[in-house]
Image (tube, rainbow, N blue to C red; front, top):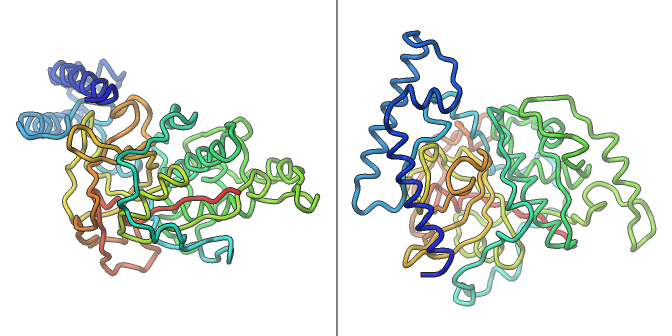
Length: 379
């Protein structure tokens, strides 16, 4: 077992103990998380019923001798389903209404290579952005945070230094006329739309437009103007939009295929991926395998690598629910290195398609993780 595996196992054992201690009762949970429900009130009773149902489900999961992951009490355990949905709400399947032509690349020649030459593991955990997990709060901004996180990672890889990208500016400024992945802003959009907006307009840093966790007015002018003053070495003219910091385009990887995602992680860097995350809220540690083949895509996250723990392969995923969720804000999702774990998304209108698009679509990978992946280009 590698040092990473030992650390994971130790963490998992610690978290199991923590979870069992946390299963003592709802009043302890209320006190621990600073809830203000009045005991005996209708809301108190509703939240308690939710909590106790999740306790029962967790005990069932954790009592399975063949389990690959541990369910544990966390800050989400008394949230209603409608509230949990605010943590999701990303499409990822649809292209922007207008693309950037040759700069939005749809294929890459290296993906034609054989998967046998891929390494057994690849991680980008040494990057600054993977050490700082964002918390979207109750704003459905996962699509913007995933895009900002991936852009930060690729900028760091390209420039050998870190700069932040304002998820709040992306939330506020990205147009969504076709209502792809939601109604825009905190009500959902897509990573493709985010990438296209940043490519055309640039992006402020977090210090310029800090994250607020709610919809706000677009404040693109000043930061974009500041970045446009950076000179392009090739023609000595002001570099506009994403070109100010080296972004040359973005790419949607081939759908439901293992190799393009794995190769992009090896050759390029972290990737924004779409997932079905409705059952993630109770995850605490381990390799998650709790999604059936049929999956309703509704969330955007960042794939930061892949590896193997003993004999079980997994994708390393950075979420946007804060570092007090999961394994330090991360989740390991079971990885099938073939395209055989496939099903159907029967409700794409819930979080996958643009308005009016409801035809079922195929999805592959645990939690539909191979369905749609987006990666920027820097050069």
